[in-house]
Image (cartoon, rainbow, N blue to C red):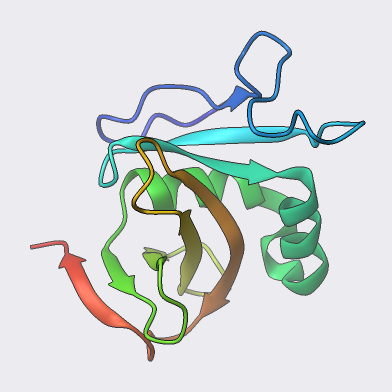
Length: 142
């Protein structure tokens, strides 16, 4: 079950919702992909099974609710920063009272080929932190 957060009510979509995986035609076996609505970018953001496995392996504190925390952070962030080290990467962050006594989840979203008509937006990683230290604030909850 997916939690409805704010105005974000769309459930995640696997591939294009019809069993096809646009953008992965060059691969013999397509990756499994989930996409989440992201109102701030006005697009859906992809999370591949490979990136999900990376997050779960490197950040065990997120294992129990990775998809839910990613969905809530992308759908209703507290702050969005531009990553100063990696152009084309935004850091979406959200505070969770129920995570390790109160922590911030950061979801790093890469936008490929920003000049393209419809660039790809995808999660490269997600992690937990006590405070935000990197990036330039692009948007913050009032």
